[in-house]
Each structure stands twice: as C-alpha cells, then as structure tokens.
Image (cartoon, rainbow, N blue to C red; front, side, top):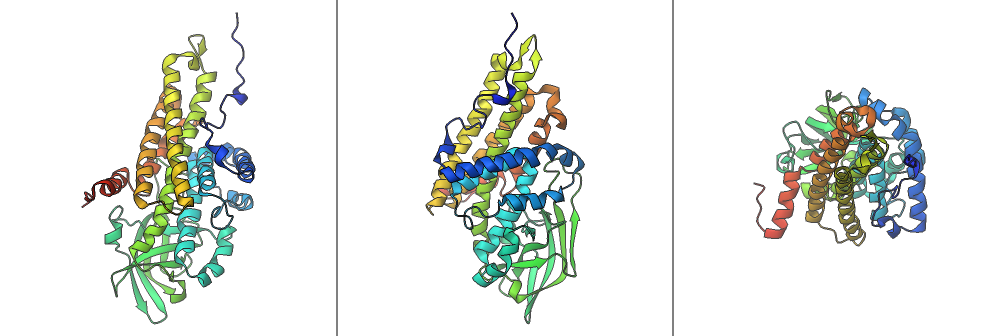
Length: 396
C-alpha cells in the first residue's frame, strides 16, 4: 500500500510559532507582518543563495526595501518592540545578510541618529535615512579594538575651529563600501572622551576597502576604513554623543536586534530541515519517519521557541521602558548559543547536502557564526550578565 503524498506547501505550524507569540500583536501588526513575509518570499529568498555565493550585494534591492518601509518601526511608525523584533527575525529567516544590512542601516546607524543627534540634526538627516535615499554605516570596531573598544578607541578627533579632524582606522564596517554616510566614533584628544561624527564617505581622506574571503554573511559588504585627516564640520558632530556611555544607549537596543536575528536563524534552520526531512526518502520512507530525526527537529524547534519567548518578554520590557543592559546581554548570549546548536542539528539532518549552498542550510550554518560573534561576543555578554548577578566584574 503506497504512502499518502505529503503536501509540502501546507505543513503544520508553517510559521514555526509553536506557542502563538504572534497573537500578542495587534490586528494591524499581524497584517503588516503578513505583507512583509510576502515581500520576503518574492524578493529576497529567491536571490539570496546566488548573491551569497558571489559575495556581492544586490543594490537594486534597496529601492524595494525602501518601498516596503522597514526603517524605524518603533519610533517613526509607532509599532511595539515585539512587532519590530518579529520583523527582524523574519527578515533574517529569509536571509541573514539582508537582515544585517537593515540592522546596520536601521539599528546601528539610524539608531545613533535617533538617540544621539540633536533635534535639528534629526530633522535634517532622518527623512533621507528613513526613505533609504541615503544609506548609512556604523564605525565603532577597530583593527586592534573589538570587545575592549570602550576604553581603547584609537581613532582620534581633534577640534580645529569650526571643524574636527579625524584620524584612525575602523574594521568590519558593514555597508561601508557603498554607504553615503558613516557614524564614526573617535576619541576627543582634548578630554579623552568618545564622540560621534556623521562622516560623508565622499570626503577627502576617507577610504573604505572591502574585506574579502569571508565564510559568513558574504552578501554584506564589510569594509576596512581609514581616516586620514578627514575634516568634518562641527555641525556634523552628533550633539548628544559625548562619552562611551552615550554609545551604550545605541548598543543596548542593537544587541536585542542581534538576539532576534538568532531567533530568525533558528526558524530558517527549522524551515529547511523540516522540509528536507519530509521530502527526502531513505530506506523507503521520509527521513521524518525516523525517531532520531524527529528528535533533532523538535530540538531545533524547542531552541527557537525558548529563544523567541525570552525575546518577546524582553521586547515587552523595552516597550515599558524598564529593560536593562544585562538583560540584553543575557538574551544575546543565550539565543546565539541555542542558534549555534540549532543550525548544527539542521546541517546534520541534511547530511552531505548540508555542506553545499544549493540546499540552503550551508548558508544558514555559516551565517550563524557571524551572529554568534558580533554585537558583543558570547563570552563578553555572559560576563556582563555575570557581573549583574554577582556584583563582581570578571571582564578585566
């Protein structure tokens, strides 16, 4: 007797939202989520593997992203942080590189302007930023400074009349090979405090060189930046960025965005692994009919759901204005650890097909490594949370 055909396009729990967290959204937000999912399925998923293999960015996607209007869903559009997080997870689910592009432009760059610029500066800059007519980047990490950049920023700023002169280098700056602006963080030689500057990438002395040979987020155009006596008008110094404590106002929120990316990565792994397990026939039956495969799929789902539950609660705390830095740190550490486990299980389910990008999982597996490392390494975020619960710093 032949086995009944499986409808691959109508598998149960298609959205992976096993505990119904999306029911917390308003009706308007649910409709918007459905609209964005449809956009991602049409415009992003079909092209992602090809552009990833080539290591190039699909610049013609930017006007389409502008049209779907994803920038600043909370401050500008009035949505909840829960909605904003679920959207970021969905974009990641479609492709992590495009989600990172949006995370850099919207979270880091736009977030810096919203949090640290004066009202006058915001009024002048934000309209073109929100519409993606101007693309931005975020210049904090340096060649010799990653986790210790708070106290070790080597890029310098020197006041010279009505201008500032910037010198130094930045590394891993996403979008910087084609961005119009970069927010550059530099140490003021006068008071040794970290300040922020809106730098036009066309200024003399500014150079961005693409970092080659990456195995993760290959669509993202990360760059090495050099600043050689770049002259920036004082009006382009972000008015409310006068110490690294001000920078942390941005990083707390963007750390949440990366944790939401970890949720999206796990949902992507679940999508690919589940579909493969259902359609791949071995020993005369689908892989999904084997107990060990079901165990792996449920583990991926459990990791994703537990991560999503943590993130939904943290987003609610953010909506209430009471979320703390150590909570963001714990979320980033926990969700990315679960993500690493989930993508490894997904890759295992695909066997040899899990190491070629043709089947999708290899890209998901490789991209997870970048998420695990950026916006604070797992170890640093763990120690931030550890300091909060013991009162003792073990970072230095």
